[in-house]
Image 1: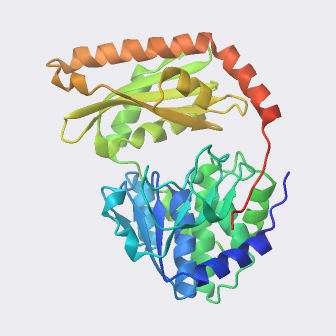
Image 2 (image 1 turned 90 degrees about the horizontal axis):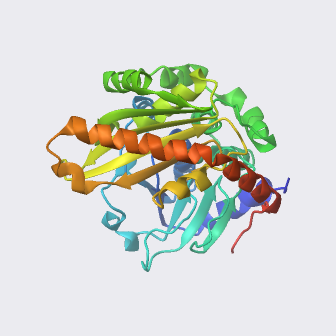
Length: 368
Ligand SMILES: [Mn+2]
């Protein structure tokens, strides 16, 4: 294990933030508890340091529990349709948490990235960042934030408690209920646990699924097939605002079935039914299963990391199909067949990923 000096890191972060006037905290991916908690951490930190900060996202939270998360912590998330809507020249720098790269846009001359944190292995191409921790030695970005927080005096106990509680939910979500915690995650949890408000956590976690999600879950269970040790379930057509439900159902099905891999997919309409995607979520309990490799065999539009992955296939042309039932039948037999073919060649994937683990060099780096 490569040792990360969180005390030095906390000092660097404080001094970098103190040089800033106005920071944009950018949630590049889906506003899940990990991305929200780590962005909220920096927003609070900026407040304490009297640095102006705004949290931006580009997808509204679609899961009821994520909406509840935003509301209980009062997270001032500004959801915009596109990154171009941020007047970046008004900001002295930006922060990206919980995303593999800090690139805002291709060929976009932009303000400097001040801080970039993520729990994935570094991407090949990225913009420079004044401070960066990218390591897969942690299960979540919230883990990194909690370990930094340990070395920062936050003054108000109320702030400590709400940050600890938010980060706890972030770690719990990304480690699949603490199933995949490592040494750093345990350290982070040991530190934040005494400050956590368990009643708030209970409130977030007990947010019920919407009736729409329950009906998709029912469809998934009706349509599920088991091929060898894979479970594959198509849920039919899904409205865009319920897209995240596909991932939740994949989580549910993996919990309840002793299979190696769960794939849940649906056909999702976008832009007032002018665009159509096949949207799939993959879950595995096997650490050595290279979901990224599997997904790249199917399409370039998607990716995976340990235990989870997702892909999209664009089929806009088919929005004109006059028969929805036939269209779904074709999507279903085709997708099921593609996945079955992948299962038949998956021994190769497992062997390749074992080899990759040997080659992987764990590292973190700072660019100052
Ligand atoms: Mn995360």
